[in-house]
Image (cartoon, one colour):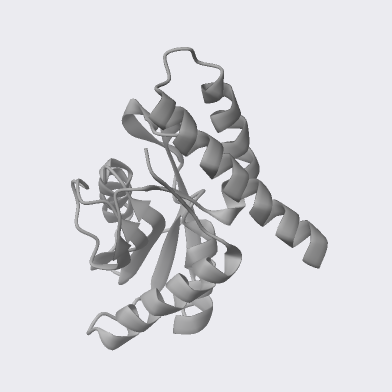
Amino acid sequence: MKFDILRWDDVIRLSLKLARKVSASEFKPDVIVALLRGGLVPARILSDVLGVYKLFIVGVAFYVDVGIHASKPVITQPLNANLGGSNVLIVDDVADTGKSLIVAKEHVKSMGAGSIKIATLHKKPWSEIEPDYFVSETNAWIVYPWEYVEVIKSLESKLSSEALSEEARAHITDALRKIREALRFYEEHL
């Protein structure tokens, strides 16, 4: 598994690029719906840049660990809004399998949305849904800055597995080093 370790400035840059793509399109959202947890930060940035101040959240649980997901995503925090025909932009960090986005889109539609578009920072080539807007396509496991500690704990536990190949062990060790460097950078410069 390849890892791409992002820093906060990467997320801001990608979010601004994503906002420009949405802004340049014909679609004008009335409402932004962030998928918890990964979509919250990009959605807030898009809300600010696009001037869309109706920002709601919906919780969708699918991943149980780095690279491991449940059999199907489930809504854990339903949307608490009547969307009444609104143009809705659903925002998440990544379209990996795409299954969480599909479930979220169905949920948003059931809440009365008119037109629905999806925006993500990243898209995986195997995603079952093509986001209407995305910035980058990758097959790497992306580590966003809001999940550094969570990923460190997960990867450290994976290193204890005897079934791990040397190549996988090297990728995990390198990812851990880069995440820890990023954390140290923020601790020293804040």
